[in-house]
Image (cartoon, rainbow, N blue to C red; front, side, top):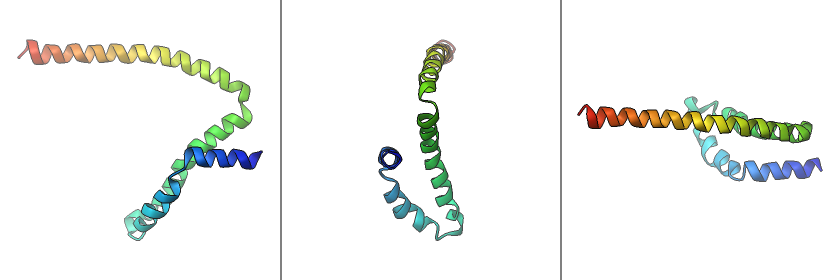
Length: 100
């Protein structure tokens, strides 16, 4: 079961990582400025996998609660962003068309 979960994560999150890693990052490490790129790439691609694996392994029941809290946050966040966009639109209308 654990092996299959690893295979699913590898195929879902990193289908292009081998090509990117060996095709681009390894040649970039030849220069001294690109020396740390493989480490940064490995950490950056590993963090989402670790987070999702932890969520699946330890908080199956908590995922529903997390989803509800994210849904509530998204509801209010969308409204706040909409008000900000409307405000920016009004600002641009005033500065471009009226004060022109």
